[in-house]
Length: 74
Image (cartoon, rainbow, N blue to C red; front, side, top):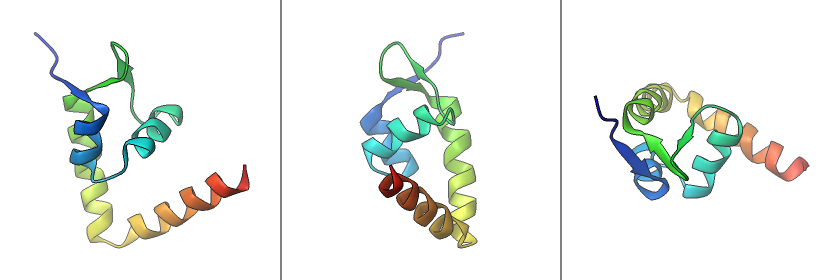
């Protein structure tokens, strides 16, 4: 079975985040790059569903604030 691969831009659009944040997700091992800077569409879809659920519950705001604080602490 062939994997469908998404570019960083496509992944960012599906997750509704910046492309740089996709790279952060890979660095934190929440996503995996395959064949350069491409992501498995099924893995992205699972993460997108989780992020959508968190956004609806208002938790994503806290997660984004924490991620921004970590970025500025370095």
